[in-house]
Length: 185
Image (cartoon, rainbow, N blue to C red):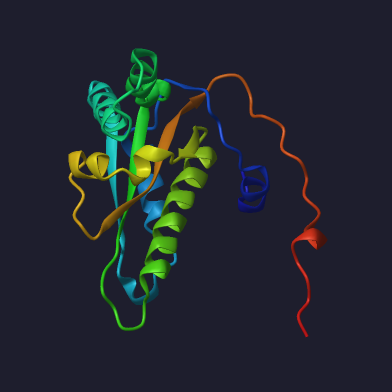
C-alpha cells in the first residue's frame, strides 16, 4: 500500500480479533510512532502494551475507577467496564510526558504524543492490522493513571485497541476539501 492510499483510506475498526500485531510487526509500528514530529527532540511520549491476562486486570482497574466516579454504578455497568479491554487482543496506552521547556509548550508536547499514536495506527493498517483510538472517562481518570504507573507530569493520550479487523471497515464519507480549507489574505 502506498503512503497516499494509506492516508486516504485510514479508518477505525471497532471489532477486532486475533491475531494482534506482534514481533517485528509490532516493533515496526513503534518505530513509526517514534517518528512523530517532536520539537527539540523531547520525545514526550511512551507506550504501555496490554495483552493476555493483563487486559482482565485493566478491566478491574476500569471497574474500580467507575465505582469511585459513581458509587451508584450498577453491576451491569461495572461488568461493561471490566470487559472494555477485552474488545481487542492488544491495547497500547499512549502516554504523554509534559516536560518543562522554554520553547516547547506542554500543548505542543501533547500534540506530538497524539502524532505518535496516529503513526502507530497508520503503521498497523499498513501492515494489515486494524485499530481504533479510544479515550472516554478512563483516559482522564486519576485512579486509572495511578494504577498504570503514570507520573504526575504524564497524561493518557488514548487507548489504542489493536488486532485484526472482524468484518469490514465502515464506509466513510468523502469530505469536500473546500469546506475545511480557505485562503487567508
